[in-house]
Image 1 (tube, one colour):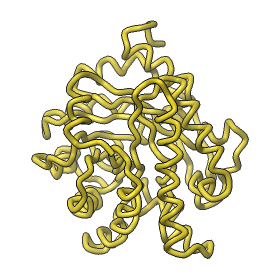
Image 2 (image 1 turned 90 degrees about the vertical axis):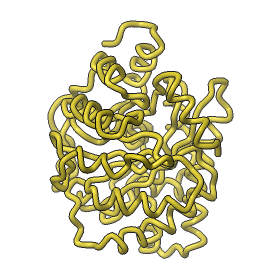
Image 3 (image 1 turned 180 degrees about the horizontal axis):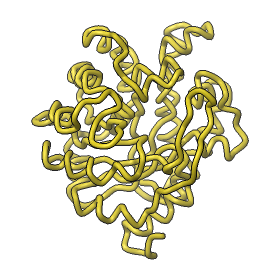
Image 4 (image 1 turned 30 degrees about the horizontal axis):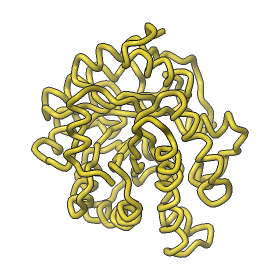
Length: 305
């Protein structure tokens, strides 16, 4: 784990390349993710596949690897009969797998521990709706044990990601305030609002003045919504912005399938960087090839396509 000031300094120097979607890379490796635990199941059943997926993104040029803990919760694994100690070990394993790849790579790579929203645990698409009917206290109580386990494993930063609701964002910031680890806060959005319908100005505003938050932004959204979100996040908080949208295809939670064509184009990320984006990558359906093109573009190499 590196101090907050080190990540802040790295972001001040220029943009860092995030990895892409973990699930699509695991599927490309032949993994079955039809389980309710999604990619988190492989922490127990096939950790070598997760390590291989991280390695694919590291080879592609990713400077930040996001762990496989998005859907890993005490409640979710508990339904499979695992006790608290077993689940804590799996959460730690998610950090260790990414760290193994990062430490074995000649380039400096950061490890971001994924903290998915409450809705991810429900595995019913709730992370795209928010408004769970839980109080701030209940949400904070849900997130705290997982945060403790992840922080103990020593990530460089916590990725509070795919948050659909500003209320949950606030609960997460309350929960992490006891830990000395930098965080980024990233909402999933539709247009200029969170999935729960709050204005992004208000959603980003909860991070204003919170030194622990090194970046705010969006992920798991349509690429077309990213540019406005970057500008709003910069204007509201003055912080570096994190942005990693989906490929542009649409997820149908009912059929559990993606529809439509990909619209993510690394060429547009230059505008995001000019507007304040400093952590740039892809989420669902964005693979190593796209990340490699993005990495070359951000490094001033081959022109993005």
